[in-house]
Length: 481
Image (cartoon, rainbow, N blue to C red; front, side, top):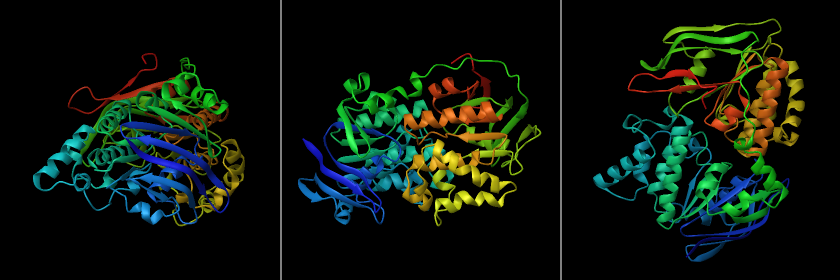
């Protein structure tokens, strides 16, 4: 039974036609995945179907759902199908969750049940997403990005909608929790839901999708069964995309550190609000080297990074910073945030936000470096005229990276810096980060869930792991992955 049919879908901005006349069908009990470069319009396809296109952007074409055809230009009519027919699992979960309600209340609200049944169903859905009871009463702001994504997956699992649009549903999740989300989608598919999966996670597509479509320059350049297309792509773009997956990169050989120490920890214990997350951690980050920090969601990786930067105090132990000659006069320590859409001001243009670094000592020189870095990251100059809500997550991530590298820091904490990037752009950005470390003596601590990426790009691999009920520990697994 056909659940969703889209014909002649175009998405048009005042500047250009981003998506140009694409069409597809998704049957009940089927998953269609759309892969494409950051900024190609993948998310705009989902927004057009949901009636969520931003002001100044219009849709053309027709959509058939719930037994009737509607023009995609009637965005208000499409919004009338929310919950009953359509449900969106968005790329930025914090934008979809109500800030003043507990996450358990928000899951329960979507069950359509009453009394104790609604709470039992909500608790079960949260447990399926590996969210423990301690998180049920939290407001969204108290969650990590990965936890918020799992809450949205729990909501998707209880909704009555027959058509689910999932925009990067595994962004920021470790392997175990990506598998949990994938299991939910399999269950929903088995229930007869039609699922449109918008993602750059090739591993997820291989394991989950029935069919795949590659979007490039506004059109589908290759479509077909997932197995056939990903094993032997015919188009040049699909071949580039598949070979850019870190799983296909050569593993970086380990070499002992011979460069100066930049930052390190000795017998470090970290935590917050009286809770100890990890203990007895001793390690150093060296100039011209990338250390990858792996570990499950919520184990304390981001807290460790914040402690190194001096943003939160250590519970015990010592953080040592070794400043060398030639360090940036602005800030020798910089952070590339996990969610760049939340570090740019929503009320001003991105160009204004990029130029704000001029207020720092040495910032004028940093502003002069931004155009060159934008060219290196394939960012168009007209992006600087837009606000954060008018660009893709991947474009925001690359702009954020350009801004921090413009200051030429000594140490960069990169918290999931490619979580919003498709493989070709990820390969470009990560290799530029590698070159910057090599050529400028930058020390990088890369927080990532992607083991293949860590093996390919990092000089050392560190793992935060909890073996029992106590705090986590840190081990060097450079030669043990």
